[in-house]
Length: 242
Length: 373
Ligand SMILES: Nc1ncnc2c1ncn2[C@@H]1O[C@H](COP(=O)(O)OP(=O)(O)OP(=O)(O)O)[C@@H](O)[C@H]1O
Ligand SMILES: [Mg+2]
Image 1 (cartoon, rainbow over the protein chains, first blue to last red):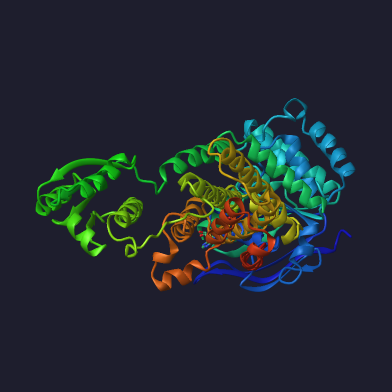
Image 2 (image 1 turned 180 degrees about the vertical axis):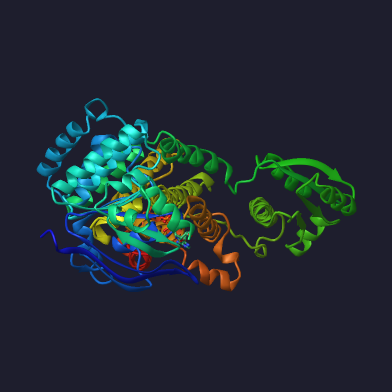
């Protein structure tokens, strides 16, 4: 199981008019991996993720997610993945509990499962006090943790996290990564983008995207060795500056 | 099935939690119904009325008295010449005048028939039409009385030549315009509110990004669409109910026909509007865009519905266009059912058209709704 590829991407591209937001990228991700998908603003990370999760059709190239083809089996992919968007996308005008119930419901979980998950989740996140408050009243860090948990409600094989820790304080970031590790430990494959290079160090492997292309892909250790630096930050700067 | 239920429940929660939206949904329509129904009337009172009486006979004075007795006319002034009267109309001090020629009485008795001039300021065409009807009515009834007198005066063998036409207004005998307007305005409200709310609702989810979050779930298109539209369908039916209650309580509009039939029809009609709302939201990215497009259609639909301007007086091509206007179908049907008591078979042709429209609009909406862009 460990060595099976759950994401296989080959020459995947997305054009907006003449502009190649994603320019023929190829990579694979193994089951259970924490895969860091790095790149500067506008590098094409979000665009690539949207193709992988089946909400944007690629212009060309191949990709299979959990064994399903992104062109023909997008709906099967959706059963097997979780997604946390770069933009907070839970309902501000629903309470914590209501959001959990709603998303559990549309993923087709039974009422029993939803009730159980809701209790577990509120406990784990320590949200007992605010469980019946509107999500709009929560601090950003809590919202992000909630969104992550919601994306895991249906026990997906792979979860795509697009900048999950953007704008979050260091303590909460740390807790967030503990959650990521826990999910990975339970066998979930993690596909995560971030702008924090310390977080890149936590990944099993990282790819670095520059202007729509993947310029480097390896373990943080090998990347640092290859570029002869001590930190991922320097690796990133060297690549992103070209 | 239960997935749909989760969406519906969430939608209702959001609707009733939105303190900015609730008044828009329920209080504004009520105000609109009350204001518009009182304002949008074809009834015209206080018509400024002048006359030229060159004859100055007992018969001509009797005619003027008829106008003085009417509550619709303010008989202002007797002009000494037609020129003066025409001048006054030019200046806008009078809306209409009557020109009674010299020897009016004499000629009437001699020839049994005579002509008088009626002049109406027709800047406002529809008002002029109404004024004309009022004046004709007064002259007709006067005509009848005169004819009686003439029979007695002259040799009774000869029949009076004047033609007697009595306008008879069916179904709305007192010509109460509110009775006529309230059902139409109710249609307008149900249409506007359901179209705006359904169209904006889905675009709003696009804007805040939750639609994307829903699109990454394995939810089926039909589940999402039914779950999304059903609450607004209920809302539309609720609006109809509130409107009907107001129509009865405040305006005392008769409800001759079967209300069940009206509800059955409305339930199909709202589907047309919801399909339209969804269709609009599929092609727009922001609530503003959706609102503009919805407005565009609503204005056309309303102006071409026969609610404010009679369809008969539109050019031929416009009349043909109105055949594709669902608002027109509903205005006709609600008036037929409420005021005339029309039954199922009477409204069937229009109801079938509406159903076809609903299938078409929702088909287009479902087809154009894409989970993958
Ligand atoms: N729908 C679109 N139409 C046209 N151009 C687009 C569209 N979506 C994204 N782009 C462009 O594609 C490029 C890549 O955008 P993308 O959002 O994928 O970058 P990103 O790596 O996620 O950046 P960030 O770190 O800021 O989130 C950008 O230049 C962006 O302007
Ligand atoms: Mg991005």
